[in-house]
Image (cartoon, rainbow, N blue to C red):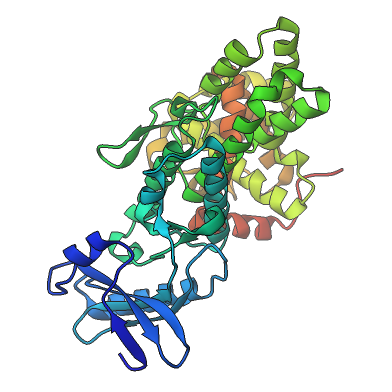
Length: 439
């Protein structure tokens, strides 16, 4: 390559020995090179993509490289160049980082504080690039380098995303969880069962729980936030018996900001191990319920634009849960108590019952489109009544109100991570042209 003096030295000897032959299918090589003009050392990676369609892959790869190159973060190795070679191999030029892999760093004795410091730097960096709409896709221990003062550097960013397709999100979640276990596993209070999934290391997969209120999609961006907040929780737990009311309120806010806790299991452990006095338990439960409820309902959000999106997302979520537990027998009772107009009441009953009957083929947005003319569903009052009826019907069918309200908040955020659903939500808000809430 023009301008470079190539020196075949990799970050780890194993990679050099096992990847010298570029002709190996889906192999890669990673070398250190000195750029004479820029007077710097770079890392050059060359690999064979798993996708046969060169033109399609080239467009996607260059678009991804362009996005990644715009990331300016001191904990992410910069991307200087990327291209697809005539031989169908991909090439990327990165900032060279002088450090050891996280795997090698962990092979030596490390204190809990050192691990916590490194973990916090990693997870905050992950959250930052998730905000840019990016995922790493291969965030294993070999792609995280540790330099002096426990500084971390994420390398090899994005080169696996295109060949993995939809599995990139699953891999991101798996490696984030494995990373969390390896660095925080021995921290006081840590329990992998506190999360609403099963970590399957053999299959490299996060298995979803079968219960309706715990069966989340697991979005990488929300999982990273959950792990960051869980870290705050772990550091607070040893002092929880000394909390005043303000401390307790802050702690409950942190818990409510997580998205993928198995909230019942977490609270059970907290009450049985760390909060043993009955009076303290009651105060904690009351404060936690109030805090989780505030996060579950858009009415408490000051930003009206975001509140409106969460409002629509909450209706979508209620309808999806109704598919599982089908609470149609309760609808008439609540309707009689809340709606005086007999015609409107009958229309809504018909609307809800039709949805429950045909739920395998419809979402809330499908039914919205079908019924908007018949029952004037674009009327804010009708929409509010339908949402309230669904909520109260569901809550009457669910024993654990903590889980239900925690589920509402998580599911709303998952819906707002879905670009296609957000487009539909924005259209509904635009058509309605009103805000739902008043101060």
